[in-house]
Amino acid sequence: MRLPLMFSLVLALSTSTAGANSDQASIATAGEQVDYQLQPIVVTATRTPHTLWESDANVDVLTSADIEQSSAQHLGDVLKLLPGVSVGTYGSIGQNASLSLRGSTSGQVLIMIDGVPINDIQLGGFDLNLIPLEDVQSIEVVRGAVSSLYGADALGGVVNIITRSTIYERPLTHIKYQKGAGDLEKVAARFARLFGQRFGLNLMGSSIKSAGFRDNSDFEGRHMTGKLSCSLGEKGLITYRTHLYDADLGVPGMDIMPTPNAHQEDQNWNQAITLQFCKGLENSFRSIIYRNYSRQEYKNPDFFTEAKHRRWIYGIELQNSFSFGSAHKMTVGGEIQNRRLDSSENGCHDLYRGAMFLQEELTLRSNVKFRLAGRYDYHEKFDDQFCPDLTITWLAGNHASLFTSFRRSYRTPTFNDLYWPKSNIDYDLDGKLDYGESGNVDVKPEKAVAFQIGGRIQAGLFTGNGCFFRREVSDLIQWDNVDESYVYGCWMPVNKSQAIIKGFEGQVTVKYLDRLQSSLTYAFLDAKDDLLDRRLPYQPQHKIAGYVQYGMNLIRNELDVTARLGIEYMGVRYADANEGQKLNSNFLYNGKVTARILSNFQIYLLAENLGDEKYFLRSGYPLPGRAFYGGLSWEFWD
Image (tube, rainbow, N blue to C red; front, side):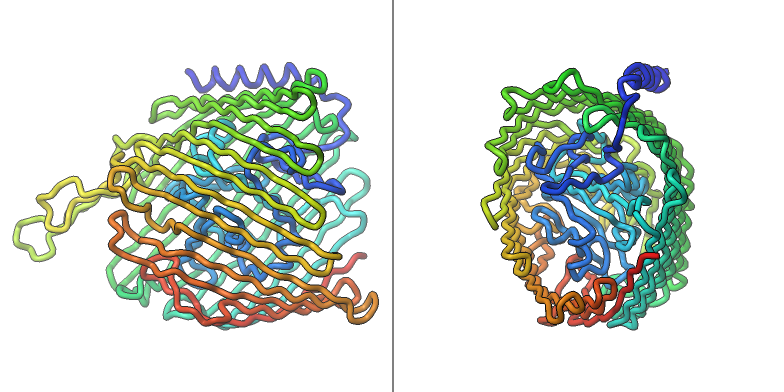
């Protein structure tokens, strides 16, 4: 009975204050990007709009222009340039790519599209290939624990992908074509327009094919997205968004244990209806109803393996923000979510969870801000959790700010952790079991306490930010040998370890006359298993990324050329908890040259791994060497 009662309380609080929002003139929620002339607006860090300088978290905002100027082939290529962000890739285009923030696992990072969670309920993480860059308007990346606002999956941070708007002054058509290494061929088209004064439409479709660079690493994927909005006068907006993804790909396996005939089919269908009302930036109401569906089929005839998985997430969320004068703002909300799994390996399972959250924002003397937040989570299988958050921000004028925060967070086990199929194998048929594995229905949620202190500064052409952080994780979930009688062990997920993760991340950007621009990011990470005194798997101590970009006008108003050179350095990592499998450091160079003709036509050439370095981001999965791609895009207004 707790779940319906909790949601009834949230609904009562939300509707009782919705009347304060009756004269709303603009929309600003976690699902929409608001553009201002001087500073970007950040919503994800606090669920309410603030300028980047006022934000009390170490957050980055990537715009569509940032994505276009980069040499990114998929979402991970964009995100890995940020400080504190690591991307683990298992091969070329189409192979799984996962995300880590501040030494987290991929399952400890919450990924959202327009404020809707989309993490894989079976594996915990999210494959970054599932998001087409052509449909991305901006990306907000919040590093550090945010469970006080977003619950279980946000132990390491949140990435909110904001899709293209439906509001354009004139009908827009955008066509893109790309071809390159590995027989890559990509076609994408986008169309957006208004219908009358109330309705807006944005449609995007793309297709990508690649033969890969290893045997059986071919990939063929298709995206189709749509967003339809209807204005409710000057006070509100209702939006329907859908995204279909379908892919067929070869699964090459590890280099020492290849799977030349393994094949996988993926399908995703995400839908959401969002209703928003807003009065300026101070008072807003939002409700979201969403459904996420995914299907995956894997076949490997060489090992007589066949697996089918279907996953569903159904959810509803309410949020209301309202102000008591200029110095006090409150946000209250809640959600109910149902997660379902139908798997040939894990079985059929159905879990409910729900939450209530409350946030108070107080402003003292106009330049000191306090934020208190707390979230109570109910989970059908695990103990209830409460995650508080205290944050203090000091605005030192219009060009500098300092922030510090103390937070508690957690992560629940995945369906794989709980229900991985039990197996016992006797390889030599001598009557003695050699190997075993299974899930663990008694595994508990991971818990963490986090602290950070950081700041931002802007001085003339210079912009910089930096942050020191520390996170202590208890009941860390790891696969461990629980029965020594097996020759090679009997493995299952257990709450065995504790981790202490601390470090620094910083970024410096310099712009000169809008022509020359450079940026450099650095992250130091000390992520250790406290019991083993060993570094956590795949976590480098040092990571550097940066670029230099120069633009020039060759023919006035007719031809602009931009050249960009990027660097990436990732330090030594270990692939296992005992530091037995070492991955060497790698230094990559990437480049891109773009020619823009008559403001609406572009031709570009990009190069990846110019030094032809042989490297791995995941043990046993080599990554491509030097590769070149070329393409063109055409954007025109009716």
